[in-house]
Image 1 (cartoon, rainbow, N blue to C red):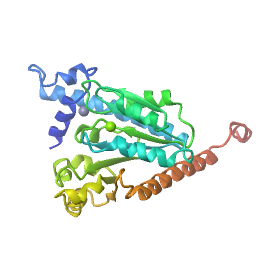
Image 2 (image 1 turned 60 degrees about the vertical axis):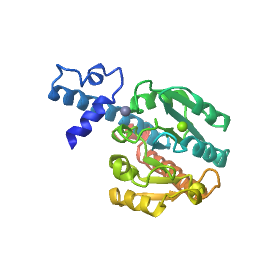
Image 3 (image 1 turned 90 degrees about the vertical axis):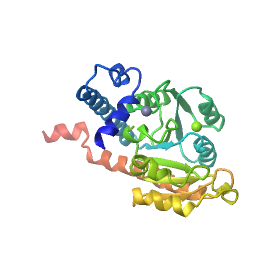
Image 4 (image 1 turned 135 degrees about the horizontal axis):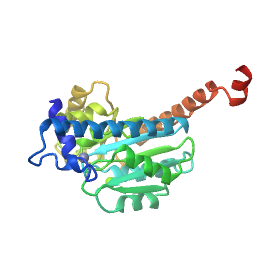
Length: 268
Ligand code: MG
Ligand code: ZN
């Protein structure tokens, strides 16, 4: 089980990890492949820790949005940005293999956005996110929405330093996605059951999908939502605002505990 997960991650690693990309090539032993994979994940975790430190030092609430392709992530973000506009500083990092179409949609909605094209890579990693967030020059107390590459497999294994992974499952998909991709539903803290306005036209059983998701992750919070009808939007916005408030409050708590250099010297 563990080995299979490692192998998948190795196979999905970026071109720059040439060893890992070629991990299935003859001549590379399994033990060597596992070592390469461990090194990639360890390095990713170091970068994720750096990102997390930066977010907490600046009171930034970062969300990693993950889903299959076509779940309606970008439309949901556009609606979210419109609702928060002017009330909450925010920025978006868009991950896609090709094109900057989604970043253009986000910028048109009024939010700063940086597009990361992963090329053959099928997930964002913490190093890419660290570089993108420096380009964005985030304001303190910002909301940072990271739209990951549409893929329910390897983004589960790559910590970006986010406060939460938010998994989006659309009602145009199968109810059993949580059972098919358990790692992702286990890694997430919130599931947005999206496109709920389409339910009257579909066979999809929302209660069953939620039951499957909670079978994998009993703690999972669920919001039924639609960017089209606005159902669930208020609950989602309230959840975001609560997270932003907590991030700012935690930063102030930490800042007040660090003695200033002047008083520190006086005590020495
Ligand atoms: Mg998108
Ligand atoms: Zn991948």
